[in-house]
Length: 126
Image 1 (cartoon, rainbow, N blue to C red):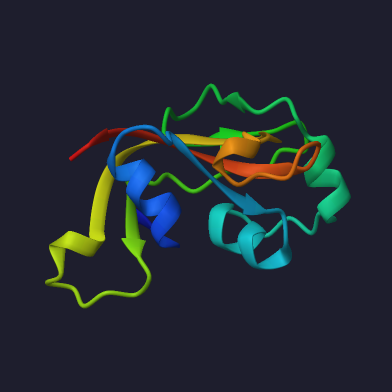
Image 2 (cartoon, rainbow, N blue to C red):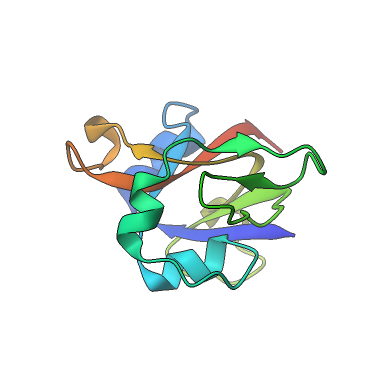
């Protein structure tokens, strides 16, 4: 399963250049539903405080945090510059998916200092 994320030009270009190695999404009901794999009714505050994300003992494809929710097992991150047509390869970037963490992001890469995000980690360009 691929995780598709749309980016603004500034972030797309530095991701493509290999400089920006992670992407940030706010911890909102939308992103909780999109990135987690079960229907646990957790508050945003509970997820934000669950900073001990660990690999589980059952599957290397799933990650859980202190509260026991699972991140979906994405295989690659498909980053797009806006919303391009499927054949516009100049505006589509595919990267290895290296997992998701819950922590602060890098302000140089668009994160607000002191704010907790879902941090989507990128690997090599495919």
